[in-house]
Amino acid sequence: MGEKIEAVDPATGEKVRSFEVATDLQVEKAFSKSRGAFDCWKDLSIDKRCEYLERLRKIIVERKDELVETIRLDTGKPDVEALMSDVFATLSMIRYYEENAENILETEKRKTPSEYPKNSSYVDYIPMGVVAVISPWNYPFQLSVVPSITALVAGNTVILKPSEITPITGEKIMELFSKAGFPEGVFQVLQGGGRVGQQMIEEKPDKIFFTGGVETGKKVMENASKYLIPVELELGGNDAMIVFEEADLERAVKGAVYGSLANAGQLCVSIERIYVQNSIEEEFTRELIEEVKKIDIGTGRDVEMGPMILEKQIETVKDHVNDALEKGADLLTEIKKEGSFLHPIILNNVSHDMKMIKEETFGPTIPIVPFESEDEAVELANATSYGLNASVWTDDISKAKEIVSRLETGNCYINDVVKNIGSPHLPFGGVKNSGIGRYHGPEGLKSFTETRSVMINKNKGTELNWFPYDNDLYVDIGDLIEAKHGDVGLLKKVKTFFRLWRKM
Ligand code: NAP
Image (cartoon, rainbow, N blue to C red; front, top):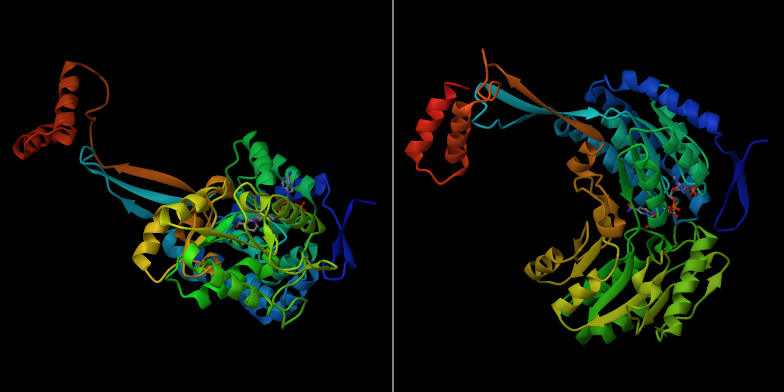
């Protein structure tokens, strides 16, 4: 009997099904199949690849409710959360590639320096090979399918390892890709935990796209370094929300509640720290407490917060809350846990020596910290090892932009939270411990390709820079340096170029 993983419904704790874990041999076979499939897939036109994407999109639209049920079984998240953030966000990305991939990846003509007369230059974006996608459990559909389709549209083949916490969604993803008719071996799913992820790296994929925690990300990078495999890391966040006194208070409060509690806080771009200007802190906190009372907890269509997906996460939340209370924080709500459902926890008098502020809590906690000045707000927001997303709230957009320019973060939202990650046009990724690389947008699509630079020389005969080296060539290069990069007059420049062009 092979190794198994159990799919457990986080809302009830009941085992739903068990799945066979991929053996080392199956991992090896999947890679050899993927390499075989790459030979044909890479030669398809982007237009042709997009036809597969279009079919996938239509199947997802048709089966959206079934997908929501699948994601609910794996994660317990509210139906709206699954439909909006897993299904809708994925569809937007597919549509974006259908409409833009061809343009983004088309051959680009580039300028050629004047000392290369009769030359021209261009850049090609070429597929890399087999891409290993390793995804987390919190948005098991979006965070598996989006990197996979990005790799595929760029001409790569893909092997996906979903989290062992969400194997049902992993299986469903494979079913959808098969239904869409992707050729055998172009897209595959391997079920299993960290060991399977590690084994995939040993098979030397041509790129690894990893989404998950910082510690695992470091291990992935370390293992990949043995074979110099390019790695893209989408890691955790500790996102700050900065609320200035002139902000629309009611909107900021509602934004804070949504940004902190969406997916019960198990969201990489969740608001983890709220900095509120002194003059409005009391009112903001009072209204926040009232707003949080409106949150319904449970599963299904008309609830806002589902269960914690992982028992380990409940322990982290407890640890961070206890640490904050021991160090003097005030609890403004009661701590309530029903099964795997945690109620929102609001705290103030929190400080930067507390785990809740320093680290990623990944749960329904809302710590509030007052600040006096713009400088202090920026300093506090940057006082973390993470840099994924942030938000700045004020009616003064110039001031907001100035603040944003000083924030150490890969992404930022002015007067809103979270949904900037859903724009297919914007590159997404973190700075500092939040990761390496970008996906989404043109930059993100190109990151799944190798750049090949090409020059064409239509010159006849010999070249100025070729052998033999002698004093004449030394003088010519010296003159060229003066003309190109020195402070010589226009006439001298033209004369030098005219003289040298004849030799080039
Ligand atoms: P995780 O524990 O780091 O796991 C991520 C993936 O890596 C899972 O598929 C996991 O498998 C696999 N894995 C574990 N050990 C491995 C190894 N040695 N080699 C290769 N793969 C290995 O993260 P998580 O708990 O699932 O996700 C939560 C974290 O992801 C949070 O920190 C969150 O902020 C971050 N996240 C970031 C983004 C972003 O876009 N920046 C988005 C979502 C989440 P198993 O799960 O099967 O063990």
